[in-house]
Image (tube, rainbow, N blue to C red; front, top):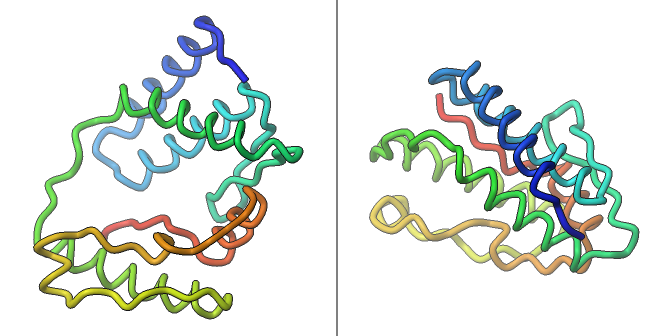
Length: 157
């Protein structure tokens, strides 16, 4: 699995164009990044498309380790063009905490064990807890199935 330099340049140029069109619209930026990821993974040999809910579906053909490497490489390349992050305020972290607690309930409904979250105050001080953190999934297909039911896309109000 390799991306040649021409493919990388073309993909990064497309992401830059998508992000420029979004300006400061965070949901739009998220959609642009998802579209870039799907295109990058497809070019890397893992046909990927976006579902109606904005999550990707990928066929790994049993090449799970190569797929995870491709995801990492595509993320690294995408991160070179991302705009500076939105200011992370206490209100933002509080909203994100609420989202993660709801996500925890969804993941548990799929019969996975998820450790309890820290208190809201502890999370705001050190936002290091995530419901997917200790979920043991064996394949990319299992991950995609869980992501389909319990998407991790957080959009602040």
